[in-house]
Image (tube, rainbow, N blue to C red; front, top):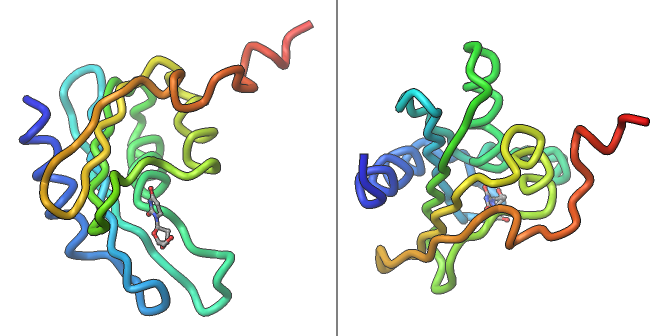
Length: 131
Ligand code: THU
C-alpha cells in the first residue's frame, strides 16, 4: 500500500471521531509488517484528560488482535499544520517500533513523513529496563 492509500484510510477513520469538546477529529491508520492495517480515531470524554488519541486507539485495536509488529502509521488531522503524534502517543508507538515511519497529514491533504526516532530522540525504550 502506498502512502496516499494509507492516509486515505486515516481520513476515513476520522469520520468516526468522537470529539464534542475539541471539535478536532483525527484518524490514524497503522500498518503492520504483514500489511494488515488497523485504523483508529480520537475518543474524547467529559473528563477531558481521559481523551484517547487516534494513534493509541489504533495501537490498542492492533495489539488486542494479536499484532505487534508495526512499520508505518498515517495520521489525518484537520488543522493547517501537520498532525504529528503527541508525546503520549510517541511513547506508546516507540514501545513497538522506534524506527516506525510516521506520515503526518493536514487539512489540505498534504503530508510529511519521518521516523518516530527523529520525532523523539533519546527515548526510554523497553531495552532500557534491562540491567
Ligand atoms: N489528537 C489525536 O488524536 N492525535 C494527535 O496526533 C493529536 C491530537 C486528538 C486529541 C484530542 O482529542 C484532539 O485531537 C485535540 O487535541
